[in-house]
Image (cartoon, rainbow, N blue to C red; front, side, top):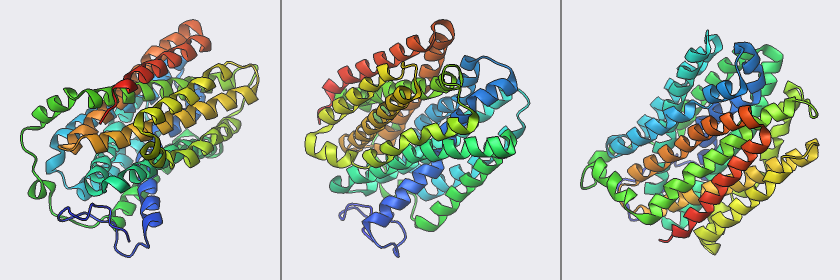
Length: 401
């Protein structure tokens, strides 16, 4: 198999030597991403059912479901700080194994407060695995391979949005809410098994490449770097927009005039299928056109989708969802690849900081846009999403290597 690391780097961590090549590497990277974050958005497919189950408002339930982003923001920072001392394989394996615990406990959460706390715990585990994998890819891929590797990882993320929502809607509709969470706990353990058999054992990272200076100094240095600082802000805006769109559109879809049932709501998320195909091309497009044109084009595609989502008929709303999904995921892949290439030192800290900003954007987006949705309706929520995309476009001006 093609080695994941640059040929000049010592003691490289590689995927299993029996894998046939680049395609297998991309498959493993994508599948690892899928099983890492499949819990993050799958629960959104059953938001209306959860809202009825706990007897709360859409904004309250949306905040509880997306509280996982708070845990992910914290874990992104913590893992980034201690990244040089964490064995990548052990850290990813342990995170995915522990993730199954809060996932299974969600099946019996007695109230919204416990449900929210368990979602935060899920976020801590998911982001630990996510950040360590991104740091690993940034450290072990050559400059030529990095864009494709990051695109494969984000593509797995996109696939988790589609397949995870479909599974969640189907299992909850057929077997109930509790069975849904037990099923996803089994998927978490499957991710741990995949990592166990595909990532080889290596010596601890601090024995290989201990960076100069403290993690705090590295974080400050990254924030003082204008392109990196802009990329952190772009990540914040991207998930702000994505969360705002795909959390609260669920309530639009189940209300008149659309009035979809639970299974129909799950099938709606085939809108992510184009994103699975297009995101895999993000690395090549960014390499050919440059990061800034790629992100601007992606944000423009997402922006075109916003007015369509205000249409009173299902076809228009679905078309808008497709465009927002394609645009935001493509932009995320380009921004993530940019972080890995520009942060030449302390990449684990840079990846962790980016993820903290990215997931903070999701949490803030849920809180702000949920208030807008409850108070002023779907139109105000869509306007807030448009403002986030516009800010991301302005920040893209600073993305120079």
